Length: 131
Image (cartoon, rainbow, N blue to C red; front, top):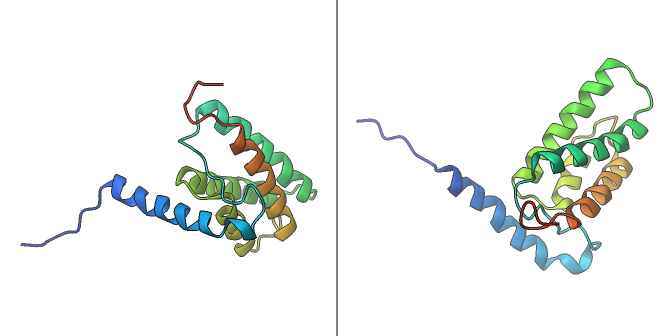
């Protein structure tokens, strides 16, 4: 018979968590928020709030408002949210955004996004609904 490898989603998720513990070790070389990650899955409201916050940052960076730019912003935000959902740290997200070398998000813009993201994540209680 054919043997297929089976991965449970929970096993895949633990990969991301292990990377987080590595990030904490290098904390002294980074700014305060770099090792921050979402403490849990963000609620619908938190997602919406964060998305509009980051979108404002990106639209400031991309004052040329042709259609392709808006598409790029959407793609970039989708990717950012995927990383946040996978428990990636702020530093990881910023590095990834910089490495994409998109016109709308150069290193300066990526760091600004990172700082907004860090400040936002700090306000999130680890229990949903707690404030």
